[in-house]
Length: 221
Image (tube, rainbow, N blue to C red):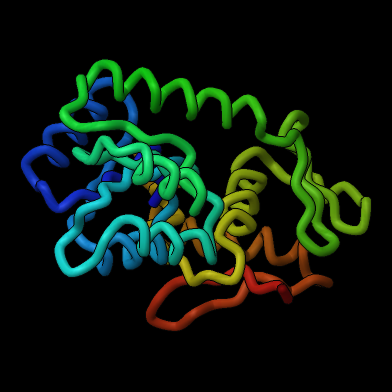
């Protein structure tokens, strides 16, 4: 699934309160209370920004930030009761994008987060290329070796979802939620949509069935 924000904080009450506040204002937010739950979340979901506490049970935010930075470039805002300049410098030098001290005003924190999300949204490219496939988001068109695939709107959204999650097995439920949203669609109808997309990408053969799981859009790194 896709979220705007992941809060990583072992103060569960504060994390949950912050998440509930963000969700009320349309900023989809989930929480993780440990290093392990954070890394597990990142393997199975997407997030636009991470709010990371420094003090975590059996770990600390500095070490976790270093681990995250090996595989992800997601913006990280450190949140901590520590106010020393040294801590702030460490946080920013190891890959943090901002440093926010506790206690924080929820409205101010939300404003900072929304400002960063908006800035990143404005930076998003109008096109994306993976191997021989190019997506034109402005025109909602997809090309294979510069030949228009003539995708319908839902086929384009489905292909975009697969490419966003390339080389990662996704479940039917994840596809339905991210591509169709609240609209009801049967497994049979989904299979038909994927078959049609496969036909148009027959030469590429990127979409593979993962038995018992769902599908994977498999391309070489």
